[in-house]
Image 1 (cartoon, one colour):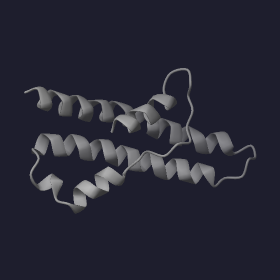
Image 2 (cartoon, helix red, strand yellow; image 1 turned 180 degrees about the vertical axis):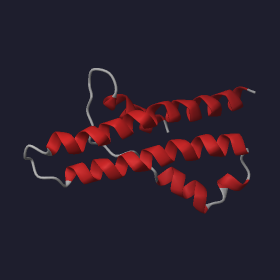
Image 3 (cartoon, rainbow, N blue to C red; image 1 turned 90 degrees about the horizontal axis):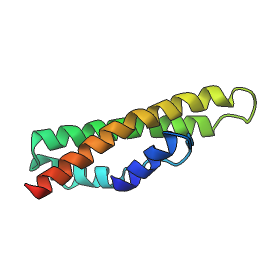
Image 4 (cartoon, one colour; image 1 turned 135 degrees about the horizontal axis):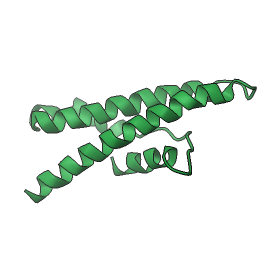
Amino acid sequence: MTFNLRIANYAKGTLQQVGALFEVAQFRRAIADGTFTWISDDLRKRIEDAYAAMLQANSLVEGARGTDRGDGLPKFFKPAQAATERAHPLIVEALDYLRWRDMA
């Protein structure tokens, strides 16, 4: 998730860039190998919320990439940027919770 935080940081602040997709292979692998059956409900919820936001942003970024480079491009990228920005605090929350649990 630290890599995904870097991607979310690009959509915030002065950079305001969108285009890279969030990496979700680890999330899918965790589902497949049963990781979510043995972690706490609090941690699972935070991770799922973060990845749900990332998957939504990925869909919007991919949709924006498919548009022609005409006048409509900004209207497609704005929702993608907003979704990426919404993912940011959820990623931070999940990472903070993971770090806190490691220290406990």
